[in-house]
Image (cartoon, rainbow, N blue to C red; front, side, top):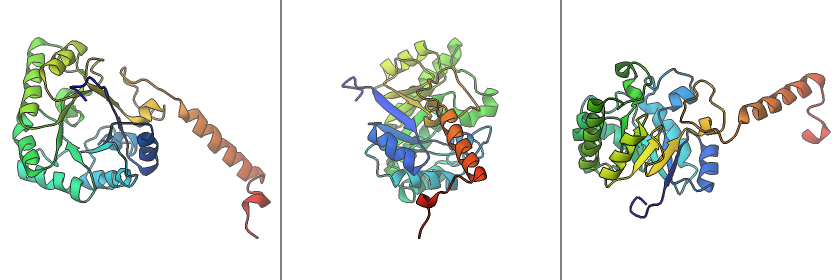
Amino acid sequence: MKRAGDRIAALTCYDFPLARIMDGCGVDIILVGDSVGVVMAGHDTTLPVTMDDMVYHTRAVVRARPAALVVADMPFLSYQVDPRDACLNAGRLVKEAGAEAVKLEGGVAMAETIRSVVTMGVPVMGHIGLTPQSYHRMGGYRVQGKLEDQAERLVADAHAVQDAGAFALVLEGIPQKLARRITSELTIPTIGIGAGPSCDGQVLVIHDILGLCEKYSPKFVKRYAELTPVISGAVTSYVTEVKDGTFPTEGHAFN
């Protein structure tokens, strides 16, 4: 797709019904993100997410039998300690959960790990820039690569991820000029999130574009629908009808 100039549309997903809907709309990549910890479980960061969490949610997405490529995030501490752990946990996401690829964060420091997982036969998507699992080191969710030395480190990270065998690279929270440079230098596709329009593809969180995640509202998110008031209206109507006795009716009962 990069060679042909076709833009790559990716979205996160954590469950069966949304996976079916998204796949029917022609999404190219479904990312089962560790953002599930924030979006679905209410944590402030992705750090508490476990391998069991990721296996559970990836299984749910895979049951929809999507045509899209299913990529599962490797959560914090599932790959950082040593490459052997990374291989075992990547294998779990493929063998137990049904993922077709995994994603992990980090550049130069993770090159050996990426190479080990790829050598084992599991495709790897990289992720550099604003890496949520490095929340504490970065001092929160901050744009990365604004300074020249930081930008050069990210360029080196991008090449290290590619050279290690990754098939694609997520660029998150970096200046668009830097994203444009990295995209032009790499032969593998870049998937942007808060990295501007020059990336080979884009990824967003499904709950963000539907207006269902009010905890955070990053600048780079575009809301394509506002479903919160729709859901709120439906629930309010249900509660009202139960309390005033207008639901259920005879038509909702068995004889």
